[in-house]
Image (cartoon, rainbow, N blue to C red; front, side, top):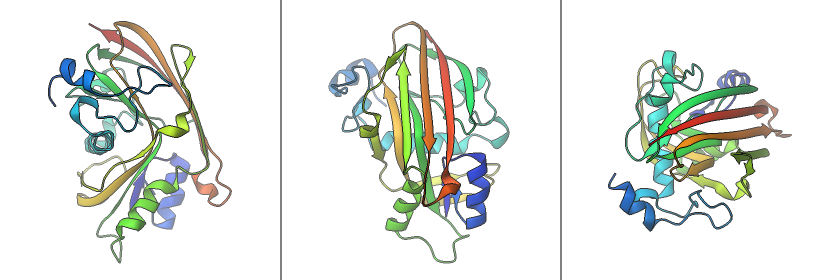
Length: 239
């Protein structure tokens, strides 16, 4: 089983345990989805941004992330230029961090929504498992690193409320794991699921914006999952 979404320390520990914590017209369809009543400008988890179920966007994010080669993957090797790696469609994907603190700059077109994981995991079963995991076991694996988490976020200095209400799961999907992937996992097509807390922003107005997130996990039952991080994105939104 492979599970991504956790810190370097936990990745090594979980590897030891056998688990790697691992499009249509925007101008028309964006009016057909519901934003969160408490946080205007943020898609609710029961919405359909651009005509696609929220959970299916988690599938697309997971596929996008794992496809980027290890040596240029923006989670571990970020540069402002790599923020644009393989971006297509109406939603711009951002990566979280697996270190204590980082500030990043990213230029984004003003017609793009933004999807950023705050605390998440994707798990799949492959040929390294003596017995393939059941769907229940894959779900439990995807959720494992996201328990006992404390998260927060601000956009342009304004606190985003009730982030715990944004926990979402993807449907089961076939993840395509390439050669030279960021986790050095077995390539192939495997049954997978994503779980976690995502921030899904509607397109921002042109100009400069600051998006900040903090994440900490203190799991008394499985301390190998524990970590803390602070991430700030300086977003330059171009018309």
